[in-house]
Length: 77
Image (cartoon, rainbow, N blue to C red; front, side):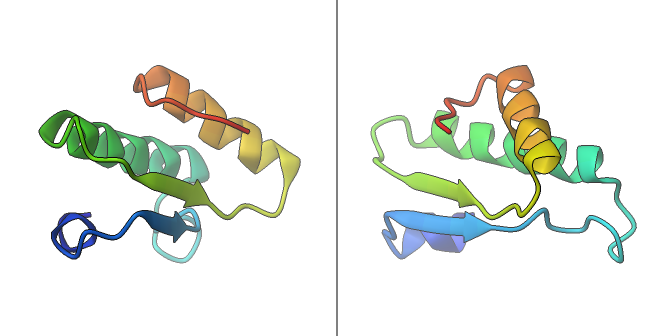
């Protein structure tokens, strides 16, 4: 996330990093990623950025949406 902000990128996309072969559950991955996004937003409150999550299953989209709500990250489907 730091290099994303340093390069002044406006949009970044993620799969559920670390889920599956990385050893994290899908829930742990989504929660960890949302925590990092919340920290980025708090550190750069005026930055206009868009973070996209690439998920292929509706249940994973709901999981990401729930993690966003839990970490108070604005989320649009």
